[in-house]
Image (cartoon, rainbow, N blue to C red):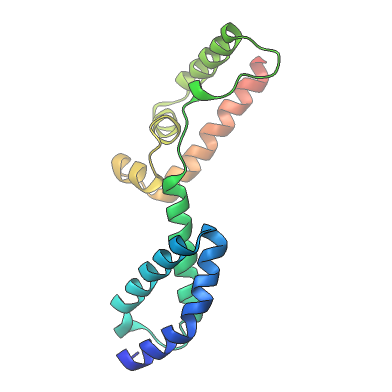
Length: 157
């Protein structure tokens, strides 16, 4: 795609991309920032682009918005969870201790992945890089670890 073709396509697409980003972000200023980031990435790939770029641009805007939302969403530790109905602080402490004991029973790799993801708040790609694993393998191991904890909780009440 030439520079002129890029400019024409982006002038046509910009309102659509802003509307898409506004739906995700709920704020016109943030949406504008997300679209600017997407347009910059598309500009950097301009030589490899072929018309039409509508689908790629929309997916890029969506992914940038979702990444932004995920980054700003605070991760809370298990200690900050609200108490269950009808329980007191001692019961909550015991519940948390029970959960931690179950996590400690897991094999090393699933336990490490579970801790890094939920207690340290690390992203999947960072965990994969740290453990020298594929991201898909980390996701699968995390899913299995969660399932194992869930089953142990159900078995032990």
